[in-house]
Structure formats: structure tokens, C-alpha cells
Image 1: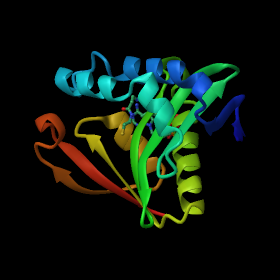
Image 2: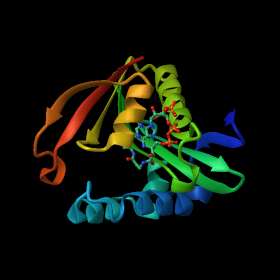
Image 3: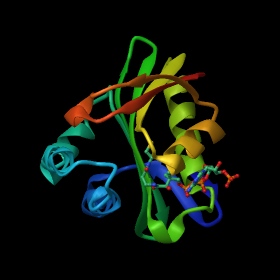
Image 4: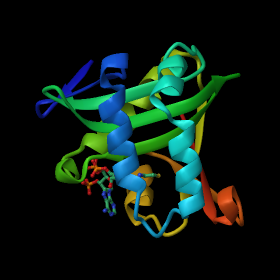
Length: 163
Ligand SMILES: CC(C)(COP(=O)(O)OP(=O)(O)OC[C@H]1O[C@@H](n2cnc3c(N)ncnc32)[C@H](O)[C@@H]1OP(=O)(O)O)[C@@H](O)C(=O)NCCC(=O)NCCS
């Protein structure tokens, strides 16, 4: 686990799944960037049971940032395969933003993926997500192309990070 400003970055464990899901759902609910249908599906996908099973999947990675026992950040990589990692959600609790936690999660993710043999990470961000774009640029990601009408017919940017 890395240590930064009283915040510990480490692997998600079964004990913290409930908190991690609450954080994830709270961060995306009610945001105009994400359609209701998209959110509904995602919340169904990430049931506690499914996430618990996913923790055992060697091709996936789930990280949390913790302040004491409180989960204040979450990130995941959907698939680490063939030297490429498909980076997923990255969320920091609203009360804990602008303290470098998002950066610490992104850097930890990259370090672990590199250690697992990745030479490249890819991800997407919703167009108009300025905080997400800011974080990606600050952590050495490069914006590639816009994906029109992708998930739930929404537009995304495709990004890559060469490790
Ligand atoms: C994006 C998010 C994870 C950033 O987390 P954070 O802990 O506040 O980020 P950090 O403090 O580590 O910031 C690192 C860098 O990201 C950029 N950044 C962070 N928040 C930003 C914002 N609101 N607008 C523009 N750039 C931002 C800055 O370059 C910052 O570096 P700086 O502090 O030296 O200026 C957080 O805002 C969040 O959870 N948003 C909702 C979920 C989301 O949109 N996730 C991203 C999906 S791609």
C-alpha cells in the first residue's frame, strides 16, 4: 500500500465492497453526463456479489483509497491482457477531492499494470468531463479520438497511456 497525506491506496477487499459501491454510485447518480439508462445498467452490473467474484479475477484490478476505515476513492481496470490494460472507473469522494487522491490512484494503477507486464493502458472519458480530462492529462494520458454514439449512444474520448 502507498501512503499519501494520511490516505492509503491499496487493493479493494471484500470487507470494503459496500462502501466502494456506495461511493461509485453516489458519484455518478444525478450527473447529466451519464444517462439514466447507463447508470441503471452499471449499478446492476456492480452488485456486491459480482464485485466479490471479480476480486478473484486475475485479469482485473480494483483499488481503493482509504482514510482510516473510510473508502474515499475507487478505481478499476476491467482487463489486463496481452500487455494492455483497459482502465475503468476512477472516483474520489467529493469531500476528498483536490488533494491528489485521484492522481495517487491513477499512478498506483499504472504502476501495478506495468509490473504485470502492461506496456499500454487505454480508457475513455465522457465528452465534457473536465475533471476527468484534467486528471488524465495530469497523469500522462494522451487523448486520441472522439467516439461518437458509444455506450448508451453517448460521446466519449478515447485515451492511451504508454507505460
Ligand atoms: C476526476 C476526479 C477523480 C479527480 O479526483 P481528485 O482527487 O480531485 O484529483 P487530484 O486532486 O488528484 O487532481 C490531479 C489533477 O487532476 C486535474 N483535476 C482534478 N480535478 C479537476 C477539475 N475539477 N477540473 C480540471 N482538472 C482537474 C488537475 O490537473 C489536478 O492536478 P493539480 O491539482 O496539480 O492541478 C474527481 O473529480 C471525481 O471523482 N470526479 C467524478 C468521477 C469522474 O468523473 N471520474 C473520472 C472519469 S474519467
